[in-house]
Image (tube, rainbow, N blue to C red; front, side, top):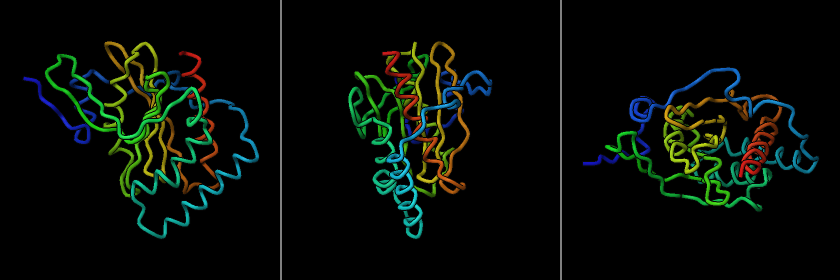
Length: 210
């Protein structure tokens, strides 16, 4: 009998034991978020400054997931180009991924899923500001394991509205994942600049591999 596990309850140890997923800190594993990316335009910088200003104002009040999506995520996806061809954004998508021995299935719904030609290219989790990023990483990795084209890397981003962390997964019999540094809107300057540059870069990498 196949056992169904809600994605929200998945732990990193579950993914390690059931799917063989391993975390790696190798310097050459996840370099895609590093590098000299094209500079942002003056219009993009102005828009990102406005996003941060809006967010900082909203910190005076409780910020729920729906507000995070509207005020922070939606503008970022727009500026990164994911609302234009060849990308298609689908929200609240059902996800199912089976364990190696197919005795268990992880099921759940993903908050924002970016699709290009029906392929998952970036997984983004938006959670209440009070949630730590570590609480949504296992869920996001579970979704990323369901990549229908395992020969290609899968990229993701988790955020609680204030902090952002990028993920990369390589599939195969022994899947591995790595993480970027944490970007925060509480840092000096505007960390939304590199976040958008990285998202744009991921989009280019995926489009080139399609």
